[in-house]
Amino acid sequence: MRAAVAVVAAVLARGPRTPEAVVDAVRMAGLLFDPRRVEAVAAAAREQTAAQWRAERSETSRLREEVASLMWFKERLAGVIALCTGRPDGDLLLVGEVLAAADGRLRARGVPMTLRWDRIVTGPTAGGPVDAIGTGGGNTIVPCTSEAGGPAALVLDDQQRSALGGLLLAPLQPAGTCLAACGRPARDRETEDPALRGWIRVEPAGAQDGARWWCSPWCASVALTALAAGAEAPAADGGRSEGGARGGDR
Image 1 (spheres, one colour):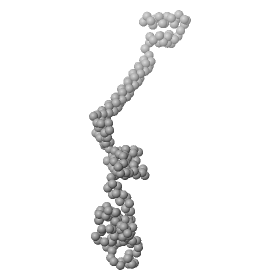
Image 2 (image 1 turned 180 degrees about the vertical axis):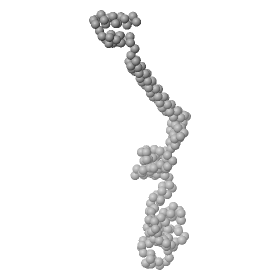
Image 3 (image 1 turned 90 degrees about the vertical axis):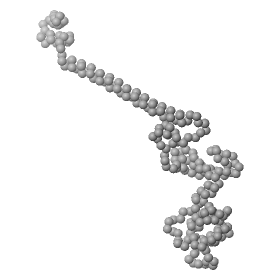
C-alpha cells in the first residue's frame, strides 16, 4: 500500500496526470497484477524446464548406447581371447571357431568355397624343398584366389594329380549324340565296313576283351581315361592308340 501511494505521489508531483497514466505507472512498478504477463512468464519457465529435461534425456540415451556398444565389443573380445589363450603361435583357427567364440549365433558360410585359378601350377619336384604351406616337394601346388580375395592353394599328391588330370582332360560329349553300337567289340576284317566310317577303334594293351569301336572322339577319350584310371584294365601307360593302344580313326 505504501509503495503504491509513493508511486502515485511521484506521478502527481510531475504535474496533472490522467487516471490511466497513474495506473500505468503503478503497473510498471510491478504493483498491479497482470494475468497475461504472469502466464507468459510461467510458460517460458515451463518451456525452459522441458528443454533441459529433453537435453538430459538425450544425453542419457546416448551414454546408454555407448555403454551397450562397449559391452558388446568387450564380450566378443573376451570370447576370442579365451579361444586363443594357450594356443601356440603358429596354430590355425577355422573361421567358424572364431565366429562361435565371438558370438554363438554367428555361423560361417555353409556353401563350398569358390576359388579362382591363378593360372599357375608348381611341382612336383622329387626331393625338392618343403614349400611355403608345409607340403613336401613331391606335391603339386595349384595356387588360387578365394572369393573374398585371399590366397588359397590346392595341394595334390601324385595319385590325386593323375586322377584330377584325367577328369579335366576328358571331353564332355554333347547329350544325345552317342550311338547305340558305341563300345561294341571289334571283329576281324571289319575296318572296311561303311557303317563304321569315322568311328575309332581302340585296343588297350592287356585288355582281355580286345579292341572296341567308339562312335566319336568323346567316347574314345572317356574310355581311355577310364582305362588309365584302372577302371577296366591296369595298364601302366594308360592304354595304347595305334601302336601304343592299337586304334585308328577311320
